[in-house]
Image (cartoon, rainbow, N blue to C red):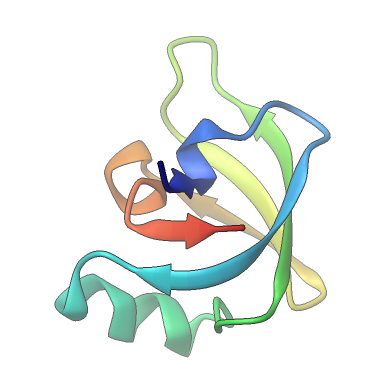
Length: 73
């Protein structure tokens, strides 16, 4: 079963292995979410949306729908 960034708990990290949606993946790659890059979950809002991840040296806020498209290993 593949895990996504949305499955991470606060303080957990994972390495990006791919994407589920080709359209969103292009936007995410432009923001530094490239395969092989490690992401760290910094914060989840009380109702789970949005989340904040540390990627490529900066903090990136994502909607949960976007985070579910980023597969990690």
